[in-house]
Amino acid sequence: MQQKDLLEILPEVEAYTINNLMPAIAKGGFISDEERIEVAEKMSLYSGLNKTSIIDHNLNVPTNFFWKELLRDKGFTIGRLDSRYLGIDKMAAGDSPDYNAELTSWLHSFTPAINYYIREELNFKTDIKYNMFGDVHPWDRQNDNTRDGLRQAMAQNPYLKVLVQSGYYDGATTYFAAKYTVGQMDPSGRMKDRVKFKGYRSGHMMYLRKEDLKLATDDIRQFIKDSDSKGKSARY
Image (cartoon, rainbow, N blue to C red):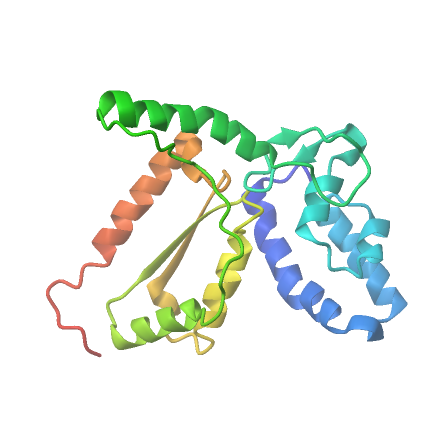
């Protein structure tokens, strides 16, 4: 499995998730022992987790546990926003990492730089610190109809198009969750030609990888060009 390229294996994993894993989880306690073991073995092959831990979670493995468990035997955790970053916890035991390995790296890299730029280059003097990351909890998700609102806007404007850009190593806002959400936005499929998805071999901040910085920028430019209505009125 590890001999295959990432882009070669992803379609296979996506198909298995939709056609096999999700129906298996939906069966709950009525799934047969044979199917439970079969699904756990396949998940183990794809994810790198051991079969027993997957079965112990009833096939529905929490993300926190995955970040903690994947490299537990090597003494590392993996990053939440970018799984290419590694962390070291106080104890190997537990169900979630002590900290976000990628975030500590980003805060040490970018926070001093942006604060210096604001004060010294832009000459904006303030005693307020520019925070790269802050406590936004508790989030108010009441009346959160973003997906339906976007579908309505696209239905009303035939020239409204959507580009979704995601990093494959982002474990917080995962690329597949984005694809699934967009797919459920318009179950009829009548607007699917107006939605494009672009994935990159990076994490949440996909532009940190130089190749993806250029590729993502080129993709945005092309998307803008393709979205030009050529002066036509917004009607079907």
